[in-house]
Image: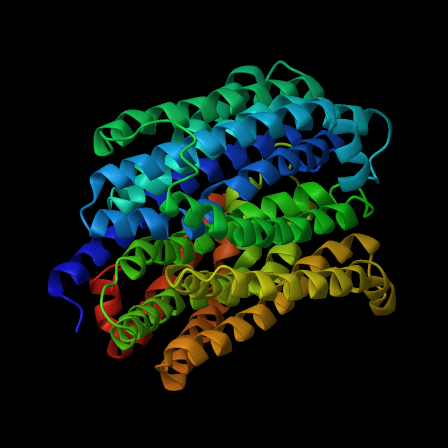
Length: 523
């Protein structure tokens, strides 16, 4: 059985991750709300959202996901074995290698930006294309700083210092919010977009520098040098390769979606960005928080093969049940009540009622794969703890291939077949990605069960959660009509409807899983 101290530490770790993510996501929602006020679904908004994706390719390739899979399992194991000298050498070597790679790629990215635009957003023309190019060139150095910030996160997580690493993005959001509030009322959209991009770079630097002093204190033996002769560093590099390709494949899928969306009517790229901000909230709070806190615990498991497998099964089942408890009502809320959520966050200024409905449709499409995406993160963490980075890569390739084929079909011919406006292809795009996500999830689950065995999450447990969420949504729909006549502010209307939805769900699931709510997000 898992030691009680380890269980309490994991509970606290997941709760701290969730708390940090919650703060950063709330700051992100405020940022997006203000952004929507000044940009709406304009051409400048399309340009900014598209530009933001391109340097993020660097961050996502070398950032948290890759380092979590390749660096944390090795470094956390050294910490668990109480070998601080070797841990310091590994941390310093990874920082040196990462700094060199990101510096070279940032330079290439700035110089080759027009080529990226031709590949990623070929549908952009004229002034819209020129604005996108200038924004990408501004944003690239900031993405490099965020990669180094992810290196800090890997060290902090391995030492169970979760809150700082996941709350520090608040600084990045504050920088952009300040730029929007200060310059928004006076600058034209194109100028404001460039100002916000520079603010993003400043916020990226603040995010890295805020973590660095704590990292230095935690790793006093760290030496910044290219110590590639060390076996543990070579292990990180060997693990890095497949995860790098895997993340590249996943990012390729995102850019294929952006490429397809660039050919849809104006506003599609921006609306997908607005919906994605909401979609990522439960992914981060309930998927990332559990998988991030579980990875060091899984990686620190010591003992024989059967002991490690049993330990992973216990952690996996507990994490999956907890994720389901919170994500299932999120799925139902996105599909049934998404217009209320979108209006509460974005409905002001240039963001009109038609934009609310459009973004709701895209958000509902995203909800199709939400549960698979969040639980899939935990399965991937289990593979990474086993130092197997190739299996998730294989299944990521399958998902991307399916996403591409289904995305093209859903974005273009499907709206015509259904007799709806072409812009709704954006909703088909997100829904097709969700279907592909479910296939990837099933492949991960089957493959891991063959490695470590499986303990059932429980069909009855999941059915009760789905039933409770659907009943809560039905009751909310019954009360929304009379409330709409009395409450006119979107924020107040959201409180008056979403709060009862949550309370009804909790009341209906109380006999089934009271401990889930009382013990937070840990296991």
